[in-house]
Length: 309
Image (tube, rainbow, N blue to C red):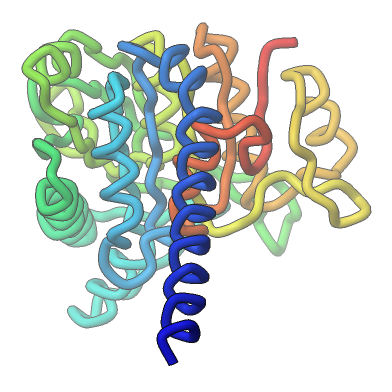
């Protein structure tokens, strides 16, 4: 009986030793990447679809670990599904033109409430609960994201001609004041940014979160822009993931129709960020647990990486 107990104990010890060695190998593999990203800014766009229900604990842990290993993470979040759910609860009908939500005054009030209030504070609380120190802001704070109104258009079904459409309070970044973010980062805090812009008269604008993330990454000269979404990345015509693209290759895939639909604005955001000086942009599936760590701290990364050349 004693011999059997000794054998079982030895087997448990061997399993523990193998687990420790595996952990050590992971840490050793991550070390060069930790060093290369030291004091570098990483802008992470956390999409409303990637969030699912609530804030996955793994995402909050990843952001905290990024900060603790010397990076400066900046989180920009979306919230389309959550906005849609709240509008439905309030019996406010949503209409879309080319994927953009027509945002009248009543809708804008709900959009700002959900983005700057519920979702922003949920993400801040999740990061803080994981051991970080996050602070929530919107693009309106400190006039960080000054916006201009988007001129919408659509195809008239009768005439088949493109006609102008008033999208209401839908905007795009006109100017990003990176100094506001630098002040937060220099205070050793993690900024969590809601994609609400401010107009020249103080009015609020609903801005696509991908667009805000790209504009912020370019303005702050980020090392990398990471777009977390609910798809694997850019797929080729064979349905397989394309792991690396140059800006020119990405433009060509848009032109020939390989990149289509909702992936086009994400890739265009990545291209725009890289052309503004961001070292690289990557589109990854935010539903994968700890995908940020896989992308930043491993040799193979995850998703589709887009670089200048």
